[in-house]
Image 1 (cartoon, rainbow, N blue to C red):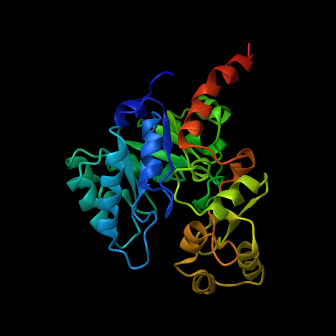
Image 2 (tube, helix red, strand yellow):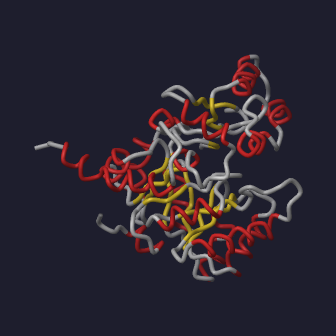
Length: 320
């Protein structure tokens, strides 16, 4: 497979990035993805126990990943997290080559990270934010469409319409994210102007991921309408359809305010669903692509399926 600018920036063989899924993007998963030739990403809070020292937890995750791979891997830093400055410190101290940043202004830490030699890929959901990210020096933007699991941008732009507009608007590489789980998604993303893809939900349903088995199985069992966007007033999040999702949707239909939604959802439901497997009271972030995920496999199998399927997809194309 031809190497792209993303491959060169991250030092990887294949233009595939594993999403930095909160609570579940653990060291074992990141190392397995990187060993397969893609870019594994660690989430700072992956598998963290209650009341953990998050800075030292991240450092321990990095050391664990290094014991499992000699390939490059990165760290995801949500910019709105109170501990983000500490995570930046750890990334620099540990010599991490790539970070993906999200949910905030990239101006905050990009200059310091770049000065330390760290490549910065910012998750964005609009052309305006892509241009802003480019202006402050990020190395690439991750165009995340509304199909993606977890928290999304408010404008409900899909990956299919977002990627080509973003590719036309900036000169730095664009990574397509949201609704991608196989070789067809990779080829489509490249046709739209992307130079890599980021996948999250497909990597949750892997043996190496620390996610609870109930959560993984919910992804496998989901069909094309198995996920739903909730809490638009608060900040839209795509989660597995279930009891909690219906409660939130009912509150929204009855006119609940953002403050009421925030009070109901609270800070711990994502951990409850992801790590403890309680999908009645907890959230399970899930992309709309879940209907394509039929079984729990290894992270290497996910990468191999995407890369290995490209020749077949290209061979079926006859656009002359």
